[in-house]
Length: 567
Image (tube, rainbow, N blue to C red; front, side):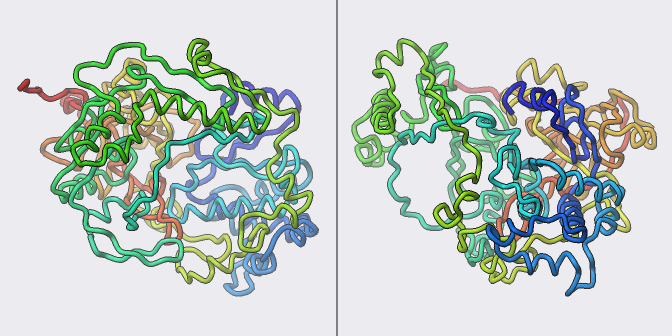
């Protein structure tokens, strides 16, 4: 969120409730009620809240009638009409590990005042990750405050830059891309499945498809060995293609697992323009240094490949990278001018270095138009309304996603009757780097323990295993193992451990399922959320922890580059 907004809201009397296994999901400077929920049970909690609203007559029936469809079907589910399971606060309490009275009282508080529900994107990254998002929307609909200032629901507010900004809805130009002649696709989280099972069928969003047989991977931008799960499985899958080509500026895991690495410039080595509808500032990005070695801009590499393949003119349209930047700016300038917003001339913008777009005088309140007139401003759903029950999704007849929000028992969770692996591993965004970028830098290094990524562990879990602050320990399950350094705290739910993402993958040469550096995706399952979205489910992950001999830890080699022969 924009700096200071949360503190300002608290000074204005806004109350905060942090529903998370991790207290640090809210800043220490903010006074918040902390409900330390069991991981992967947010949907059950929200169903319990919804049932309380319905049972006590606190739901906004007028809003549900006018702006929503399918509430009657959902209400029968809450009441257990068909499955004989009432989704009450008591039912939810047994699942999510919170007192039933706390759930009932929270529902009453939410109904008794203006309430904003904020869901983190991390909730999608679990088994059945579609459900908490859908349940949150339905909960907000039952409160009836969608479209009102300070009410309704928001998603991913901690990860975007437009919260609290009343931005102009600008439409910046983009480079023409044409139409991709290749019609085959996969959901991005299914990369390893595609490589290991070419030709196999998969279901996605109501359709039936099959995995293509890939013989060459060309990867420019992003790092699959950072963001994918079950990395030992991905390493095995990565051996299947005949050739892997990547663009990289450092010797990370993607470069290590590529046959051909094309060195590319970083943002500090090239000229560019930063402009996005999520920020009022346009910035001229000037190079701070000359390109290192033989590094080239991505665009120049593609243009040269186009020349070799006989399609250079079709790709470049006769423009250099600098030409395209001017074109993008001037086309955007023309578009904005039509809406009454003027940009300086291109040369003036480059000389000044930045330009701030004027902010509108009116507030942008999400769904305010829809609330004012749902017929004139319908939603982009089949009904034009909030679909509490979706006949479209129900028609897919999936066994892992119904036509309304529902509770599904996760394949790995702390509520199971018996667990070989009794700790639930969460992996959040790191505070010392951006994803895995600059993991080799001094800021990230300073936060590590004996060269390993840190793990937050509750003091009771540490004591039960003879683990002390600063120890390097082994986290493991059937998929793999990692070495991590321990930070002991009482600000995490007992039974939960948290390892930030971003440690460069560093497999042991004798055990490729062991990461010496502490990448949590070595442990996370490569399992889809459901047939609906086929998204990643990294947060549905159980592990065990054990102390290890501190005198014979394996060396971290993630940052040691290879010897390059000059030819």
